[in-house]
Every structure is written in structure tokens, then in C-alpha cells.
Length: 360
Image 1: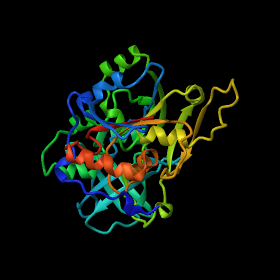
Image 2: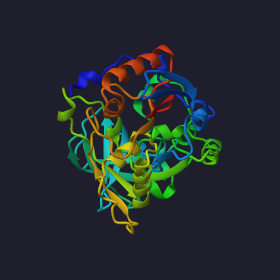
Image 3: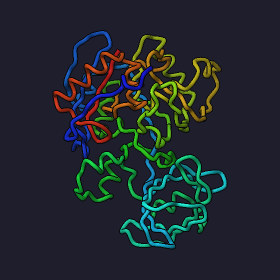
């Protein structure tokens, strides 16, 4: 599939720089796969759009304060970094951006959230592709260090679209986290953004209306929003993300689909975790373990969805694997028609933006 098919032009003023308040007041473009009609609603209308017996599958991962600032110990030059993952030996994999040339052996002092030098230092060990392997000199756990000095890993396009507007990181830390994120599932460096629209009141109303809620975990990595630079999607090197899906969730979705029900993924990350699992992996009735592994699955047309038949999702970046996943569900021509409609009606785009609901 040619990557150019995923291109569209978006006016910069439609990039949302902060979420709707309250969260469920965000606009919702509703697409029904059996009809050409488009409805314009709000996320708070979900209980009216879903049916008793439908299920929503949420990604309960929690976002780490993974962005950090630092200075070189030798020159004092500033560095911006993003924590990517922790290795078994305690070393970090990070992305670093600096005006100067970085080299193995360089020592870097991390800045605290007030941009003052902290007591934490890292040493650059080895470069792997565009990332660095680093060692934290104190040996403290990554979550503890990032909890002290880390900033919200807000996508760069939001910070650029703010044009210098100062927004306290405490606000972004609250905004860029779902209300149902599990502390025990802290490991993402980007939010599962479709879930940002939910409020406690909306979740309660959904339960009252007979909408089942299921949860899985996929830790969102930096490649999620990385544009595809290859000429075709088949040539794109898909990033790996770790996920955990309880077997009872798979059995429940399988049984629901078997009865003709609607299993709706909240976000492309939930969809990707489920669709990474083979259809026969939960056939043992008393199997209660979780399926835990990494996935490099890229979903693009044509694709046969095995587990889900509906999707709640935000509006995605051009030339992205997320946009390709949506195209796999609605078709390429209809995808472009939907996005044209959203742009004409001035929907808000990307992580803090509005949403669309795809129903079978």
C-alpha cells in the first residue's frame, strides 16, 4: 500500500493544544459502516449511541513522565530527552536531542522540573540506531528518577502549535492521562488518547445502560506517532509494543462477537493488542492467564478484524500507522471523505482533539 494514500492537509489552527473541558464535551463524529451517513454528536452521547450488551475495551496503561531536560557535564549545553524503555540490566534506552555532537562516555546531569540541576546523572553508553543506551549513575529505579525530574511526554506537534504559550506541566500531566489508568500498568510514553475523553460520570452512565467494560494493557511507545517515511507501508519498520490481555477478556469478546454483538475498541492501541492475538489462543475453557508479549503488527487495508467490529478513536496524523488502521476498518476512500468532513466542520485534531466512533 502506497504511503501517499495516507496524506491529507490539516490547517494548523485545528491542532488541539488542550483538551475539551469537561472531557466528554469533545465532539464526536459518528460513522456507521452500513450507511454513508455521518452524524455529529458529542462523546457524552455514547450511552445513546451504544446498545445494552455492547462492550468497550479500554487500554488501562498509565503514562510515565518520560520527557526530561539535561545539561552536558563538560560544556553545560542543554539536551532534551525522552525515556523509551528500561532494560533488564537497569540501563535506559532514550532518545536525545542536542545541538552538539553526542558521544559514548559523555556524562549528563538531569534537570529537575524547575530546570535546576538535580542530583541525578546519566552516562551515555552506546548508540543504537537513533537512540542511546544510558546508565543512571545512582542505580535508582527509572520510575523513581522520572517521578522526581520527568515532564509530561506531550507530542512535539502540540508544543509547537502552542506558539510559546506557557502551560504548567502539572496541567498537562493531569490532562494527558486517562482517569482509569492503573498505577500498576505504568509504562507508556504516550497516552492512549481515545480514552482521554472519558469522565467518571460517563463511565457510570455507560454501566447503567448495560454497556460492558473490559480492560487490557498496551504500553504505548514512541513509534506510535512516528510518520511513515517509506514509500509503502510494507517497507515500514514497525515498532514493538508490549501488551497484556487477560484470557477472560478474549473469551468475553469472542463470545460477544459469536452472538452478533458489538465489540468496540477504545483507541487504536486496544485494537492492535487484540488483533495481535490468534483466534485460537483462548480455546481452553479454564485458561485464566494473561497473554503477554510484544507486537509489531501493522494494520492497513486490506485487513480482516478478528476481535473487534467497532472503534472509538481520535483524528490521526497524516502518513501514520494509526491512520492506516482506521483505513483498514472504513476503507481508504471513505477515510478521506470523513477527514474532509471533519476539517470542513472544524473538528479538533490529534491527541487533545475530538473523536470519531465507527460502528458496524
